[in-house]
Image (cartoon, rainbow, N blue to C red; front, side, top):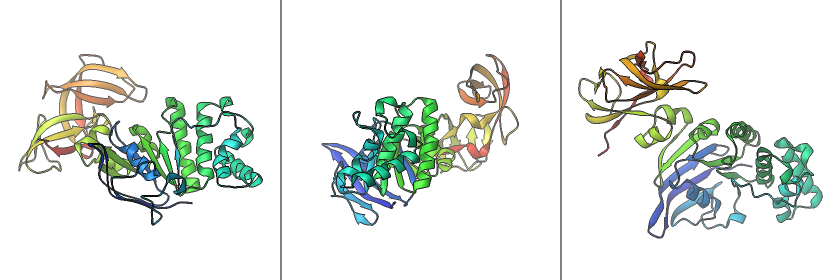
Length: 346
């Protein structure tokens, strides 16, 4: 089962604090959407409004074309999966997965059959009689997912579901979550503050800031062409360079560059670390001295001081094969299609 979601004109206050500001969002049936942002940005509040745990101060929640704004959580076609999984320790995995079906009045035989099917979906078909304490963290996460899907929700809400897992297991579960979502076709709305996680699993990322939607779109577009300086910064490391946009082009410490830019005046040029290299790309940044460098496996992270701007520190991700040392001078260049420019904020 799956359904589209429409959130229109949502505003919410906790006392005098406005947690959601003019939220308008359409989610397609079967889409995997992540709500991404720092703590306090409103993403969990928005998920709680969608699940019915918070009634919005203003606005409307539509699921599958039906107005759910005032409908209680238990009567919505949604299920929420929480970070702590909330499994019943005294129940078997089969009983945990079938708990929602039991509450819905499904008979034991049918309930067990449906629970076993969901356990098979998450790769735990042979563990139905085990208790949660016998499982690893990743396996408990799968049981929680199976339980959430067992009741056939139109929309599955996931509140930081991978936050308690270590890095390697978290990445493995990201792959599994996306594969399962594609198989069942349910609409997934997933809250996270982890940028890599959002890019790994989402069809669309919704970046939130101070209760507002700052940007939304496919992961590649959000990362490479962010709509705002906040979205650019939040989606990964950036070097900020003060520039002037004139009729001649973008005046930078490295010369006048012909790049797409906002209106004339002071602006901020944003350059991602992986956009900087030592081989000839479109934009020549000139020589730079290595301040320090560290090996990260897939790349070398270096701080570089360009000769053209000795007060500027560039962060670069260089190929891992040849570790530079402090004091080395490297020729630098950058790719034009990775540069974004925003008007200077007042």
